[in-house]
Structure formats: structure tokens, C-alpha cells
Length: 134
Image (cartoon, rainbow, N blue to C red; front, side):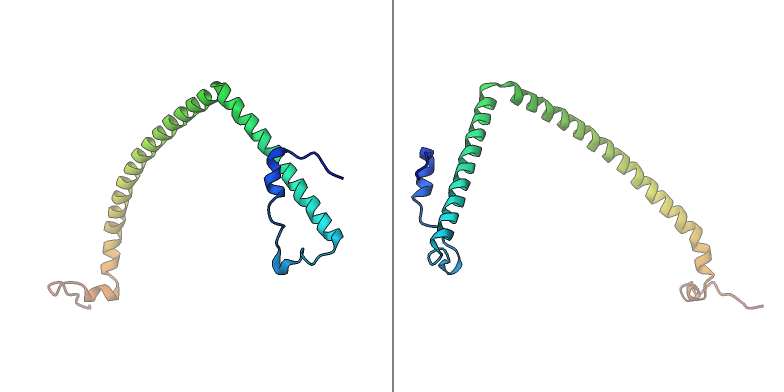
């Protein structure tokens, strides 16, 4: 029972048969071959339908410049937004970096006296400073 086929699907039908590992379709039963042929035809029909829908949508976009203009405006707005955000983050990061350096300096100056009182730090002290036990 022949079906009406889309002309552009004819090249798919004239393609070599579906090849699977060990040529299982070549040795398959006629029922399996028919089932597989129908699956391929359904897949072709599905592909052709989706291709036609895609072409129609592409033509619609090309015929009306509004969607492209709107996309352009959205892109400009996002570029401005993210540029401003990047600039703000850069400024804040610089300030945080300065605060980090200051906090680290303050932390190290507070920790230094207690460090020099540890037993291991005495080895690091200069020879001019010696502790005399009482």
C-alpha cells in the first residue's frame, strides 16, 4: 500500500538500508524488516514536518524586523547592565582587597607578641635579646 511521500524525502528512501551490528536487519524476518521500514518512514515524516515548521518560523522572523530589533534592544540593555555590574564589582573588589591587607596587617601585629613568647620563637630571636630565668 503506497503512501504519498514528500518529494524531499525520496532521497532518504533511496538511501542504503539501515545497517546494524552484524547486519541483523539483512537476516531479519520480513515482519521485522517491515516494522523497521515503517519506523524509518515515520522518522522521515517527523523530520520533514519539523523542518517545514522551522522554515516557516525562519521566514516569519525574516519578514518582520520587530523581533530582531527587540532582540537587539534586549542585548544592548543586558550589555549595559552587566558592564555596570562588572564596574561596580571591580570597585568593591578593590576596596575589599585594601580592607583585607589592612586587616591582615592588624592581625599580624596583634599576633606577633604572643608568637615571640612561644618556646620555638626563642630560637628565632636575635642573640642580643636573651631571657634570664628568675
